[in-house]
Image (cartoon, rainbow, N blue to C red; front, top):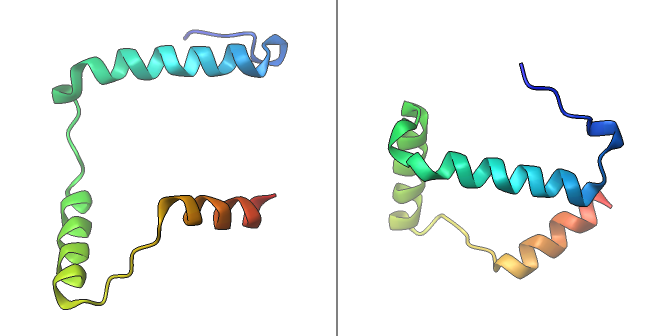
Length: 71
């Protein structure tokens, strides 16, 4: 097991580690298999889009609303 001194690391250092991990993990996307429920949820969403019942929210507006909920 790898152990990092998380409590001693700055937020910037933690973000750099996360970015490095994500970059490494994303190099081999074929190694990851999506769970079956992902496909099922995509199909449900696609049906809602086709039937006109799916509502879309502007990304900037969604971020503002979410930030307001968690601040």
